[in-house]
Length: 292
Image: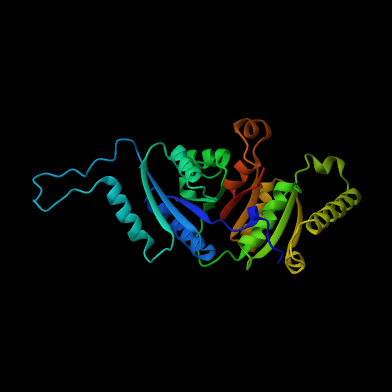
């Protein structure tokens, strides 16, 4: 494989966000697996509510007892949950608003990837506050974990809209997950398609779209053997629906989408496709942050 540009190299600093509940266990296991696979530093961050840093209450304690602080108890549980040795592990227990504190920690530690569990999302089709905040503001890529890991990712579906940022997502997928099977999907949402596009013109449009897909692949700097193994897919419909159906039928274990860092105005005015895709997909979703 050709040498990747620095922005497509696997992350070397991973931040795992955890509230120490069971809903974060899968994210923890995946973060450890990726840290070991990429030989990356793993920062595990647990955010306490303000005012929770005091010692555990005690009455008539024996003379040998020193009541542990909440932070010390959290660190003890984290080390138990992590189990075996994790090279490059750094634990952070701090106070503050979870979303802002996680973003501050990721920025301060220059993390390339933030990992968090899907349990933070309150309901199907919606994003939790922390996920929404990081999706909009984080300069790092974001991995939302739903599935229990059983080794490295094996089947990766990459979404593309033929932009430079989605090309970066494909390049990153090839270099981050070199043993995985790659599928590349472009979804065209045509309103009222059946009213104005007959069968003949529909076939012509499909040929044009596939030609565009092949041109996009040919212009993507990948090794020839890697490019030849990418499965190109062109679909019509809503992106979140087509991606979800492929995941369900073909059992892909990761969906990759790409984005620049954009503010709230973009998501409100344009719709923020990633905001619809992340909660709709029943497996892990990786938002690769393309360089500006």
